[in-house]
Length: 111
Image (tube, rainbow, N blue to C red; front, top):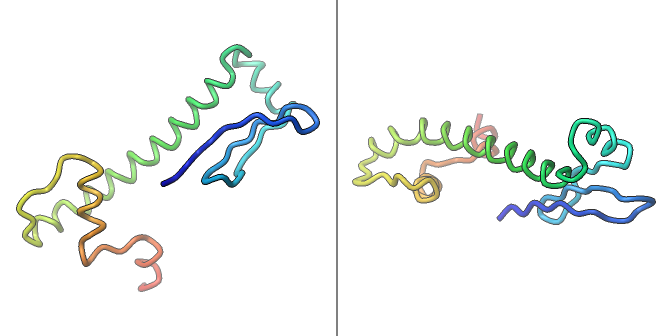
């Protein structure tokens, strides 16, 4: 499961760090934060940064799910699936369990 965290650490001032699966992937230094705070009120800064991260990742998930569904609904129906789940997680798990499913890495390695 992907774990995204945002933490504030004291390292020569406060540094905002963004981590994915406990690995730091991005940080904002004090100057960068001040630049953003020129437009974003300081009282809502942290919440606003979390909201923006959530939007970016949620948007990516939604677009990827739309493509997965568009590709796999017809394939599942053609392979005789009696019922295709409407729940996104159940649908995705059904696709991932299908013997013909390949993730991007495996699709590209066969090309």
